[in-house]
Image: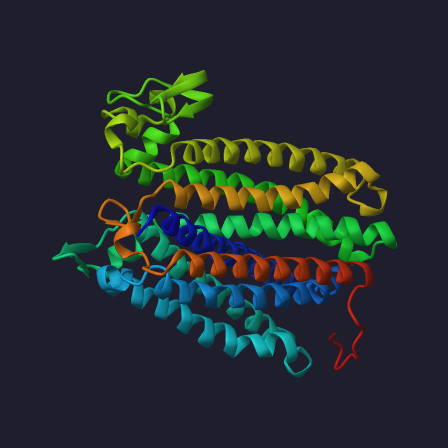
Length: 442
């Protein structure tokens, strides 16, 4: 597999994976938000109004999430055709469970959730919404388990070049709960920031109703709490993965020579050609922030030539993720304080505050993209960390085919993203179409 074919295959696959994870996370976050609204609906008119609006957004997100997963399934066979030969005993069942969960849980209950509200009692419909959220969570857990296992292949043994499962409970454990938690909290961050951005747009063109005010308050608290929780989960995932991924540790510090970690650089310009940092601003001792890593010698990047990730991308993505968390947390805190001063009335938002809420949404999207990008890029060149490289399982297709496939994926995903944005904008401006009431329900 040539270097160009490897880069093209990786770019196409990461594009599809990132698009799917983004909308899966948003779908997951909105599913639990809708369940929370349904629990409050019997006691709150505002929750009923908010649910009627956001269930439309959830349906659109679900369609994009499901559609984005189909090219990803095809790419496992077309771009990495020998992966199933090496790790099929793990990859196959997890992919099958994700598909089964999607069709059984989400498909069985989704129709009743979207179209059966007037035919069900309030309690029955709330249960249906909860089951859709559970089904979405299970699908996300199988995906998280597969990604976590490829980062840390526990519960399996490598025999004659093929992975065999020795303990499924260990496979389902490992780093999976932490990665799943990061996906969930990321979805809540995306859902919360989207709620705030849409509220800013809606109240800019018409007076707010009870649903807008309820969403505004819930969105502010949701974003702040989800950011804090996601930071804790990322720190825990790093505590689990960094000791078993020496190349990632060396790239994140960055450390070129083998030895005990010294100071962590706050900002630097790693130069792989010169095997040093062109310049660096040093920070605290690594032992203060990474005690589990600094207790052992770290292999330097010089000694990891050929099996190290792209140093610059791994290093910068980690710093950018930290900077985005700090920035988004500061904006969320400021917005919460301003909301409290305005008695959480979105009509009183100044034009700059509305711009800030929209920027918060785009910042959340960028944060999730950078975070997942760091996870995947930091594990290169491996498909299964430490054993199976992507070159071993890569495609033999010619570069013209790969260029064409990449271009087609870019066009399709761009069209889907623009379509989602335009439909969301239209719904935000004009709301939902009123429907007849039946037995006191919307």
